[in-house]
Image (cartoon, rainbow, N blue to C red; front, side, top):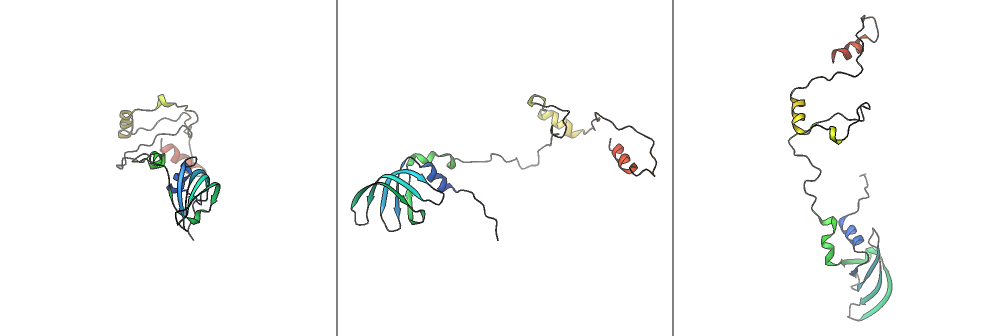
Length: 166
């Protein structure tokens, strides 16, 4: 069984943006309603006020308020001004990398509480290139003392490996 997600699609977002505007909708029986959209739900149930109802035979009547079930709606007509709604703007390449593996990892200040970085301390790209081309180990602010270790010591391999990486 697949994972259910609760994402709202663009048509529902557009319908929510149309709240407060005059919309036209036709239901499955062919009756057309035109009025101010008070509320739109995620299942397309809508509430309209000041409605002009046009029956299939062309008779026109007026209603103060109506609630229409979303499954009975054949289509909506929303105002043209909603073409400029934010959900229709092109997202483009925002949030994506170049695609040539050029990202460089910087040390996180969260992992080093002794470093209090701000934006002014961040290196510029040439400094990054120098740093990646000549990787030099940085001295630890708290170096481990080099003790004479014996191989019988249970912590000797850990300490030896740790000292070797410096």
